[in-house]
Image (cartoon, rainbow, N blue to C red; front, side, top):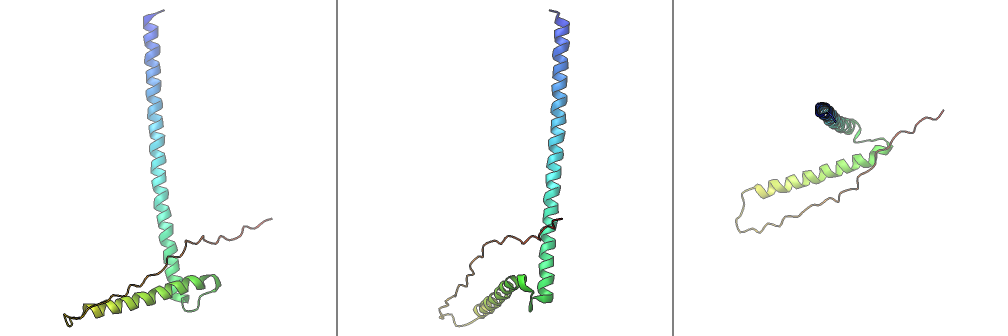
Length: 125
């Protein structure tokens, strides 16, 4: 057994392992970078969906088309509750008689279950 050849073999193996580790690190770094980019794009999509919804409600909220009616009604109802609450807040902020006992009426809205978006049907040839 030649000590020099054994040393060279070990050295080559160590170099190969180090290079493999560097390559793996680069792959993992690129994967992380791509996942981060995907998250940013998904956030941009969500913001665009919100903007589409706001535009739709602004244009057709009073007379929404079929599938949009329930969502528009929820928005209109929530806006009415917010307005009522803001009016009550304004009343409570008015300087008044210090002896008056204030009863705040809590207005709660039951959270609706998250709806699954409707996907268009795929065309079959």
